[in-house]
Length: 205
Image (tube, rainbow, N blue to C red):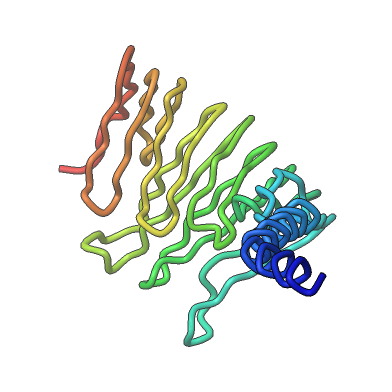
């Protein structure tokens, strides 16, 4: 009897490690299947093009580090879009000042402006007016004005562009074209398409 028990125990000892390994493998597999998978950090949702605040009958001013007024935007209604940091304004008027104090004015039925007003797209009865003051290599003020249904004004770099019919009024002279590129700092005006000019006679000797 004792010999049979010893023989059975020896056989059990022989297969016990294999049996335990099998049970351990089954337990590990069950834990893996039962444990919720880690999805990692949540991915940020893409910003939606929706306004985060509104303004009505407003005036927004920006200043440089020294406290000098750089620009002022006035409008009837405005909506700010955080995904593009743009301000959409109805019935807009804008004033922008260069480092030497030169003022550029813009107005339109609607505008889309960057947050710092350095770049503005004007839609509907758009106008951009700039006046050169005495002392800028000229003896008297000179007014230059742009008109059209669409104007793209870059206030900081003093550029105006349009891919639609536009009129340019310089003093008493008037030019019309199908498109325009104006760079005030480079003193370059490029009129494209059908160009017409009305030049006033110069007075004096």
